[in-house]
View (spheres, rainbow, N blue to C red):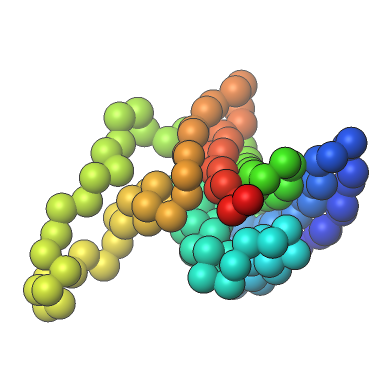
Length: 150
């Protein structure tokens, strides 16, 4: 993992991390995002939710876009600007299949039958204010944003 590289563009504060596609690097990158959130003024619980979203996004890239293969780069960009955090996770792996639902139907009281996987996008959408996926050329970007309390 390389970075962070803080950049100030006017009132925008930007930090970019370059993370190798290894599952053992996910926790470190996600915790770095949590620390950046706390520095930007996001309360602890909300910073933990952003950490969860970033971890899920990185896991999805490694498992699905790169099929578990190490050695590929994932770029994670954190931007703090006028009451909003934006985090973009960018990779050059396989694109996300179109039309994937983010609605997840399960009974949380039925612990024996809780799903073991496939909840990543649902969790990301649940904790972030907005989530957008785009494919430009050979690059995938998942852009997630979260408003800061005034």
